[in-house]
Length: 367
Image 1 (tube, rainbow, N blue to C red):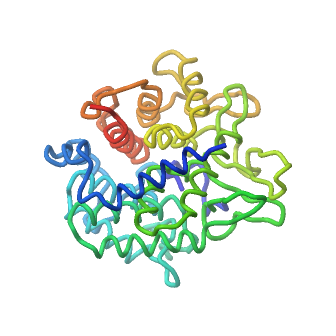
Image 2: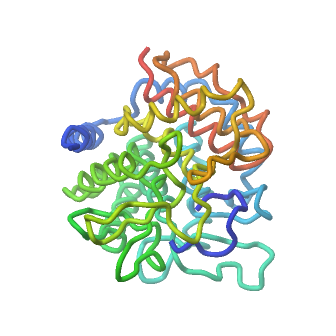
């Protein structure tokens, strides 16, 4: 669940080539003794961008604070914080974030995590529903930590989360494999609501290594197919939330109950696609055309996929970072200098998009 303040309360929430790449990458990840070269290089020169993020958003107890949304915390932010810390080789911060996440957000009956913590509320965790993207990133970061620091307990914890993702959050309907945005609130008799941005393709590779199953390939290929098919409006962009009818012959459409926008959630779709090597190439092309249609620095923060109306304010530096990554035809892995710095970001979410884009730049680039 994004920390944008857009929606209060719990959010109810032709591709064999892609699946083969997922399985091959998962096998390589399982066998890899350590980080890839770009990530190892980052660790040897501690990242000032991580230090800036840590200083602004990481509390002493291990909580990542969403400064743009009343100071709450999300499982999403905790998962991203873990990824940032392990990428930077900051084990002390990693363990601090992990400890708070498990204590405060861990659910009693499974290994998933409640999606939101409200520090000023009488009941700080009032909704036990999970947010799938948070759980995916927490598990994947544990897998990376196990490889980096040679600690099997991290891998065991990540595998337990991955198995519960498969057990509780995957549905087979209408010949499709769907990844629920959360365990509760996203299914009706006639349709399922999904969040396209929760298909974080490079993260699915990590989970396939932790808890091997053919379902990861099905989630990846199915998610890519839905993203390519579920695009709307003048620019052919994916919505933040997508309604998938159980009847395969019925049309996909933006999910009712949310604005029909390419916005704060869907901006992560091109980020993850580029990071993973463009599993949704047509969508990436559509995004590039959309971004290029506006003068530099003036692309809107959102576009309505029905009316074509755009936000009355420009996209922030976090979205700018995603756009520069996603529209770059080629780049050197060790040089993310074209991306904005966290110093320019006004809040947590924009800063997180910048760090995610910098990691994706390094891991998808060619030296």
